[in-house]
Image 1 (cartoon, one colour):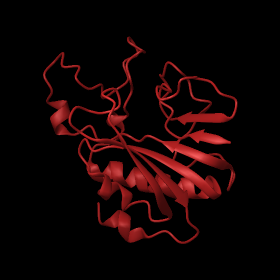
Image 2 (image 1 turned 30 degrees about the horizontal axis):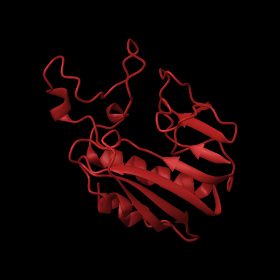
Image 3 (image 1 turned 45 degrees about the horizontal axis):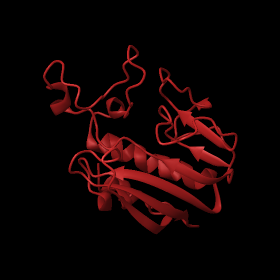
Length: 184
């Protein structure tokens, strides 16, 4: 069983509906509705339920510089536009600060550790738009990084910012609270 923990409009998938994948998201106005509306920090799933989880969190937050954008600037879509459901939704509007975003990622990885089977894999997509990958990986204390893929495709990168897919395997152990506190 596979979980897409940030389904959005399922833009990373070639086939938008696959029986072996559960798609979750908290956004209600998506073109491709998730299988379940759920927060990925507190899911309705039993322990050790999934073999693989895909996680593509927002890579930035809706800070003051985005609120000051010129009217009509559509370089980046921060909120979902119900009038144009084909636009990609990034989820930037869910977080007001770096600490809020990092806190959410930290809580999500704890939940993923709970619902992923022993030896299961977590695939994290990250773009270094504002936060370097090494800072984000510090939050994943219960994981062993198995592989880091550097993505060069212009459709998967934000201009000059590098995008990665990181494959991690669940470790048995306790959560390190200090990792989160160093970012808040």
